[in-house]
Amino acid sequence: MKPNILREHAENAFRHELEELSKNDDRPRPPNWKLSPWAVATYILGGDLPNGFHVTPKYIGKRSLVEVAVATLATDRALLLLGVPGTAKTWLAEHLAAATSADSTLLIQGTSGTSEETLRYGWNYAKLLSEGPSRAALVPSPIMRAMEGGKIARVEELTRIPSDVQDALITVLSEKTLPIPELNDEVQAEKGFNVIATANDRDRGVNELSSALRRRFNTVHLPLPETLDEEVAIVQQRSEQIGRALELPAEAPSLKDIQRLVTVFRELRDGMTLDRKTKLKVPSGTLSTAEAISVLNNGLAMAAHFGDGRLRVSDMASGLASAVLKDATQDGIAWKEYLETVVKERDDWKDLYRACRQLL
Image (cartoon, rainbow, N blue to C red; front, side, top):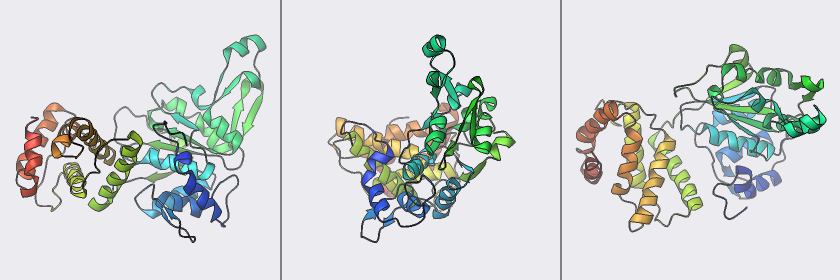
């Protein structure tokens, strides 16, 4: 592990856990998999091995969803992780690739400018002009490299890719073959090859998947955390990991601070207070778990560099307001109403009320 890397790939950051799992894994492994499906699920969800080694959870959620995702990768069906932004789709995809292939780097980031060549292959034009079409002049895509190595390829934000470009995946997923018509050749996938795609069903500017492409995927819907405690655990765990990576010289936030932050997000997201007694206006933003983690880490940075190193509500207030106020007019009304009818009325939330009101 390189000490100055801001964010290590999962297979490097959790190398020790993957090695311990491999040593204690005597179950059948699909071809070219580094771990058995059982061990992959244990790596994702965490648990204790027979030798007493503790595997930390990477994803906090329903075990059944993870098991379906892992089982899908062991079949000839590709996996589509679908959900609103901030439900750990990318995080889960990376760790699934790391556990199965020991390589999470075969990644295509989907955008409106993604071309068919990005999904299939491109050309080294200097060699193409000097030597003509040849394998040496071909620049393989991450998907082609995954096919040749029997690994997992990842496609992020699949629905942001134009529909006609998305369909370049159909032959790859159905025939497990990538034609190279310029060379009258093809690449056939090695055993172990598969694709994990992610997509969200909330953001604007997305392209629907064709029915032909959707049939090639087994879709797993990742929900937002079901309970307050579950979401608090996620925010606490991820903020600690990011804080260590950034080397923030600040004290760890108290459980009370995290609970309060997550409560604000859940109540505004649901349009209802946790006790179900007061209805609220819902802001236009997603107010996802990922945004709560960002607000907390921003507050820790404020406390570390502009305070005394101890997190206070004033350090989180600006980040919290920024997360809520995506539309100044519509969200401003919802935010003010929430402050006056909910935050102000809670005795132990007075400091949060004052800090947020000062920013209005």
